[in-house]
Length: 107
Length: 123
Image 1 (spheres, chains in turn red, purple):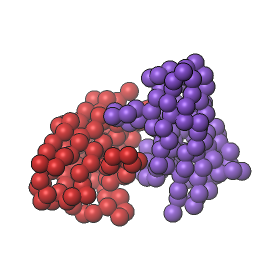
Image 2: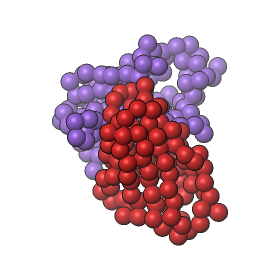
Image 3: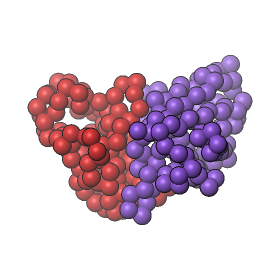
Image 4: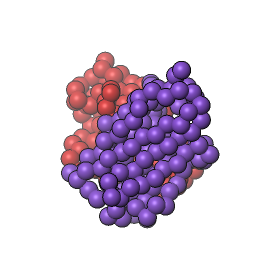
């Protein structure tokens, strides 16, 4: 199985801050990396697919980059509705695997 | 717009078999454009992919659960189902069904999710 490791596990930030979350794969996954946002008690929501493509309807303040084993999710200006947990997930080979999550909290 | 809705018993006793169903609306499960997956999340923990099924009935499972999992599809009802045998307390989780689309040469992008259903294993 491909192991996905996110950092940090949690962070505190203020509205308007630029936030970056990192995801590392245990082997090269090309650009087959997706990002999801999950709010408390809700299902995850797809934000970014294949490392850098923005899912329809997702605000442009979200962006993704990377390839191979190292990837980042950036929120350019954190909004109140962005406080949530974010997961990366590889879609290179089954079993599909997720990172452990990064919780973004209000400072 | 596609919608997915999980249904299940809520509570299962240890050693029993759980069965969950996902009803899909707004899209035909037999269209052949997607895989249909199950994913679970224990309380306060991360996401674990369980397995998936295609309209043809072809299925794939996570190796860690493969011996206990069966996913089936009923195209006449636009539903797919999960059975998990010999459950223990460690199987207590929120179970999600999700639509899995292809991007490039790979599938694995979960673009639509059900709201989730909590399954508790307890005597």
